[in-house]
Image 1 (cartoon, rainbow, N blue to C red):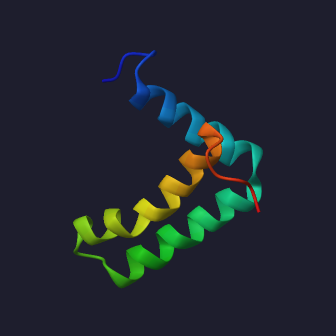
Image 2 (image 1 turned 90 degrees about the vertical axis):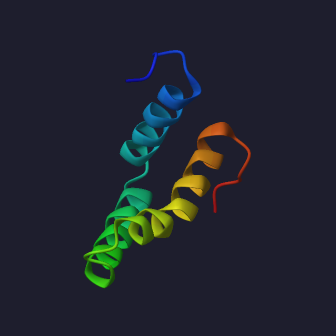
Length: 69
């Protein structure tokens, strides 16, 4: 469990809130997860690695360090 003022907590909430505010990003994330799950059904580590660039991009938007397209 994360403290509500921790960076981990702020990232989780920020990620969630941006996906709620941006249905286009939510749809992109859903499609990515489905694609990875189909290609890597028994490789959780590869699945997580496959999501990482998307998550980092969204967190960059949350932090304001990445410009929205």
